[in-house]
Structures are given as C-alpha cells and as structure tokens.
Image: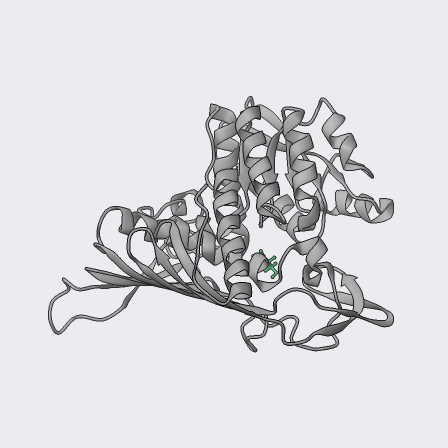
Length: 388
Ligand code: SOE
C-alpha cells in the first residue's frame, strides 16, 4: 500500500447493504492488494440528516442529497448502487453513460427489459460492472467451484438449494419496500431466491427450463418502512395489499442434464439466514450452509470401503481460495468477508482493465431465471429460460 492509484467511490443509498459495502471498502486494503485502493468519496441519500449521519458513521469524505450529483462529480470513479431495486436501472445507466464503473446490488433490475438495457449499456461503456452476488466469495463456495471444475465430482446430477428466512412471519410486520412489487419487483424470489439461482448457475451451469409455485401467505399488512438492518417501523396502522411472493419453490433442468430443486421462503420459522445447497455428482457430493459458512462437507465415492461418509473441510487453509488473504488456518471468517472478496475482484478488474464476475451478464441471466419462475407460476407449467 502507499502509492497505489486511488479509486474514488460514490455510494447511492446507505441502509443495510450500504453498511455491508462500506465495511468492505474499509477492510479491503487490509487483506487484498488489488493494485488500487478504494476511497470512500461520497454517499448520497434524500434525507440530509440521515445521509450525513451515515457518512460520518461509515467514514465517507462527503455526502450528497441527489445521486445525480455523484455522477456529475469528476472526482468519482465508481458508482455503487445499494438502493431499492426500482432505481437500479436508472442510476446504473446514468453512471455508465458518464463512464463510471458500476457496482449494483441484486437483483440487477425489476424487469428483463431493464436488465437487457443495462447489459447493453455496460458493453457499450466498457466499464467494470459488478452485480452483488456476494455468496460466491465464501472460500468454501469457491472451493466447491474448484472441486466441480477439476472434475472431482464427475458429472453433476443434482443440486438442491434453499434460501430460508423468517423475518416477516409476524403478520403485523409492515409493508416495507421489500414487500412492494413496484419497488422490489418480487418478494422472496428476487431478494433471496436470486442468490441461490446465481450460486446454482456459478456451480452447475445454465438452467434450461423450470416449473414453479409462488405463494403469498399474508395478503395485507400495515404500512411502514425499513428502519435499519431488517427492522421496520409502522406508519399509523393503515393497511396495504402485499403484491409479492412470501415463498417460492421450483424444479429446474440444467442445460448439462442436471436436475435442480429450489426453495426460497421468508416464512421458514427459525431460519434466520439459511442459505444452503447440496450437489450430487458421479464421484461424490458436497454440502454448504451459510450459517456454517467456513465448512464444506464432502463425500467421495472413492474413499475406502468402511471409511466412507461425509467429512468436513474447514476452508481456512492456504490451499482454499481467498483464505490465505485473511487469517491463519482455522481462524474463521464471516458474512462480511463475502463482500470483501467480491470487491477484491472488482477493484482488481478496475486496476487491470479487465472484467469482474458476476457482472451484468450474470445479472441478466439471473433475471431471466426470475422472469421464467414468475411466468411458470402464472401459467402453471414448465417454461424455457431465455438465454442471454
Ligand atoms: C434480506 O432478505 C437480505 O438482506 C437480502 O436482501 C440479501 O440479499 C441477503 O444476502 C440477506 O438477506
């Protein structure tokens, strides 16, 4: 560190994801030498008092009350979008038009049309464009990818993946933006289903077709808004209609012949943030669970008879992707490190003039799966996934 080029970040929004991203900017140079150093130049938000407080708490040099100012500013190189989903497209398009690199929270957009436009604009602008599927960057998930790519599991037959939460189960939990279609696009599907779709695409490949079921258990809620983390406050008791899914499940066929079984729900009591998968291949199986994210459980069919069974690899050894950048073996990392890994790749791409993965192409491909799930649930039949 010292003489590296400084890359100045302007972040739009500052709530839960704003906190996660800000933390990652601060920690990134501690762990990774990417060839450039992120500088937290400015944060924007409409509520001046709140955005000023966020700037102070997170450590931004300045703040703006209109995101357009961040884009006009010559001293900003990267626009980081941590807003609700309905403004991802407008902000990303304006940023790329101005030649800024873009980091965008998931899901990339509200609709396929928006996602296509964002991907086309990214290609045209030639800027680094990242979509925040941070769970790819858990060392155990990267190690799973290495095992699959090296052929250790052989042909992949199955993936079963779940993303289960329970934070909106109370019927008096308000109708926050994450539950309003015009702002969020979809419910459990886009918010957490998008992550397991992205992980499945990363690990197994592209989904060819699928059949789904989406449900809304609680159809009316008091009006209200998010108030930090996943907490919320109500506004005077007036009720509104919930127009997004509380839960979704789907079956998928992959292009390579693998079968998938998926479930995303915010009504799975006791599951605070249960993001997990099991993959079964010709020569063995792997299991991962975010709530125990440093471990990858592996089973290999060529283990000696009598010694077979799942065993646990703690993915903190120097041999495991990213692990050596953090702590000595056995010194575990957490949720926040998944963002640091993602940003390490993003800033490396900025330093080297290359592209990061997952990028807007992944965002568009993930969006195509989301769109197919909605179409299938509505039509009650199998649907082909549009291939980007
Ligand atoms: C809320 O469901 C949430 O914060 C999601 O929006 C994130 O994408 C997920 O990583 C954790 O849960």
